[in-house]
Structure formats: C-alpha cells, structure tokens
Length: 295
Image 1: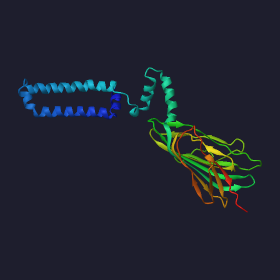
Image 2: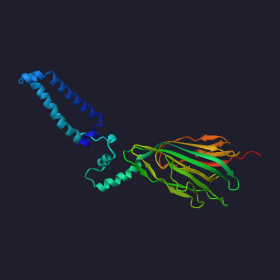
Image 3: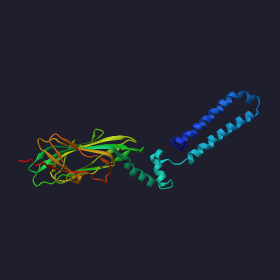
Image 4: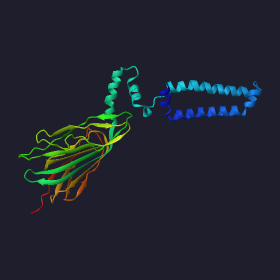
C-alpha cells in the first residue's frame, strides 16, 4: 500500500491534499502549545472540546485518507511506472506470463530518435563501371522514454549495385558504434558483391537515457540508379547532406519529383529535412549522375 501512496504523490493534486494535511497537523500542534494551560486546567471548556474534535478529525482523515489515496485515486498513465501501465492495460487478473511477454515486446517501442543525420561524401568516379564511390555516414540520437532498460537487436544490411565487370572490392562497412563502443568484431568488414553485407546492432539504453548510434560504410554506387533510405525507428527530425569531394567531377543529383541539382566539386548540398519519419517511410530518395560538360 505504501508503494501505491508514494506513486500517487507524483500527482500535483495529491501533493495539494498532503500539503493541507501537513498544515492541519501544524495548526494542531500550535493550538496545543498556546492552549496547553487551559487544556490542563479546564477540560470542560468549549475551546478544549473544539480542539479535541479538531485533533480527532485530523487523525481520522490521516488514517482513512491514506487508504482512500492508495486505492481510489485515478490512474495517471503519464506518471505511472512501466509495470503499472502494463497492468492497467491488461488488467491485474490477466495471466502474468502474458503481461511479462508484452512487457518485453513493448520495451522495443520505447526507443526513438529526436534527431538523426545522414551524409554522403562522393570521393571518386569510375568511368569504366559508371559508378561513384560514396562514403555514407548515419548518426542517430536514440532516446529511451520508458523507466526500464531499452534493448533491441536491429538488423542492418547494405546492398551493392550490379556491374558487368569485376569491380574488385565493392565496399566496406567501416564502423558501427554505440556511444563510441565498436560493434564490429573485425574492426571493418567487406561488402560482398553478391550477398552484400548483413549484420545486427546490440542496442541497449538505460531507463530514461539516450545513446549515439554511429554507422559508416563506403560503396561503389551505379550512376542513374535510384536509391532511398528507410529509418529503423521513428525520427522526429532527420537531416541529410551530399558532398562532392571528387577531383573535378561535376555531379547531377536527381531528387523526388524530378528536381535536378548540380553539385560542383567542393560543394555541399543539404536536402530538405524529413520530419516525423517512421520505419514505414522511404526517405531521401535520389540518384547520381555525371554532368556532361560541353566539348
């Protein structure tokens, strides 16, 4: 019962009631101090009767009020613990294994990203395969909104484009880290030209905490091939920039809706941010090509 009382103390309305009780006790003590002589001398005086009634009511409310506070105060999901929300949703009479299973499943939905950013740095162009060398980096600030540990094991994959000739090394996953702790056992891993690269991330966030998820890879990407990106969790604000770091190769960036943007060597283009993106969305859809300069 005391745990329920302490939980209810998070409610401002309950704090107001508790404050009133504290004032009542203080008034009782002050009254007893000033009328101590009268209480001893004349026990039949009206003031004594009033004081005794006052103290009686305060004590009664203290005992009964605590029980009422513990068992009848309205449930407030916004200040409830995670366990209390599960019980409120399923009911205390539901099977405990069901509630435990739901608890583990729902933990994964406590993680979201207030902010994320993705960048493409285009460093080279190969005319023989008509492809660009791209270094892709994505950073997620992942926050846990629950008061229990967040755990997820999200899958990550990189799919290379197909080429008519042997490209050699088609790309590498350079690092995956959570709060600067590396996730790749071998430091960096090659992207297979047929199977691509597949891995997973061990993502743990303390109660009400947050972490920085940082991933980077490079790959040869075919010119004119449309590509997009799907976030792995809800992201409130997602930025993306494209940098042309080639040695003299002007790039034509194709965007959704037929918009074309020219990015000259040394230039940076910042795409329109995506707001409230979800894992059901395909965002930052674009294609790259070479600007044909007049002879």
